[in-house]
Image (cartoon, rainbow, N blue to C red; front, side, top):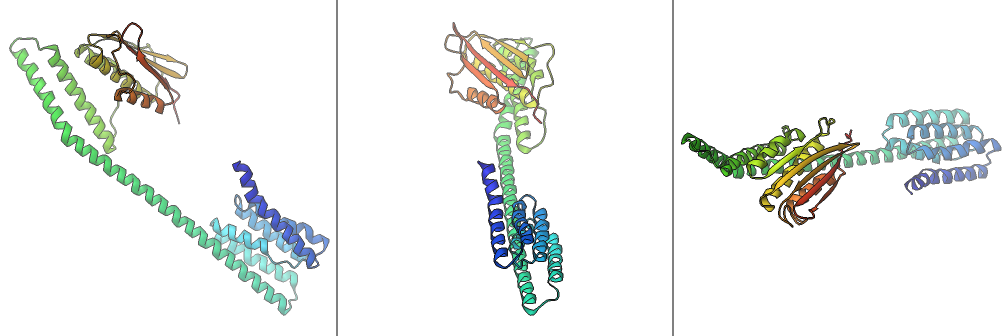
Length: 359
């Protein structure tokens, strides 16, 4: 539909102009030799949007040719060509071609009578007016583009300022509290060991969780501030499972011996899916074990996380925020996510991610 409309916009006026010029040429006594250049002058306008310089030169040559053939037709096609050229920013080309065409027409008409001089000056005036109109529109469109660019820059600046504001709020409200939790847990572990006691597993889990939360918060703040910080990928899964075991979730990991060079976004998504799944197991499944399995096939990476928790538990029912976040990550990469209760108990998550590296 768009191509048909473009053809009509380009060639409809061109054909109409060619017909008008032919009619005017025949009415003013132009001979058979003038028919071809008259038609060519109109049809050359079909190039005015894509190739305005070619249209300008083609119309100028055709106009000079039909005047030489005896058809004294006003340069209507040339007016349109000059307008299109100046609107496209080809001011110098229009300024060079216009006097060249005028000089050629005057040579064809020589010797000149007073009416012919008046007609030539009138035609030149119309050409100048067409050039001014095209230049005005070109400058107006340039100002509009500049205004749009300025608006986009202002929007990006506001978004950046908002991210910095959020980063400051997170830093002020969470960093201190997480640091207190981490320090207090570390002190408790140290005192327990100093007394010769083994620290409780729950206390060690709190210490590890505080350390991981602080690292995650630093990464989030760095992203909000626009600075680069390495993100977790598949290579960080062993540490993630250690944290899950410290929290009381028995977890196993199966990863292929050799994995291809994955896009960063895929590695991050796989890590977050496993992280959220293990978090759901710890929250909802009770005493459970979880298995994490990573598989790689042609053009895809598949993440399986299953647990053997209580029937109907081990994960949200489908509307949880964690599951929604997983689904959004997978969908953004063009993958698929299946999550739901397993027959006989527990919960299963299966995410399939495309691994073609985008340019």
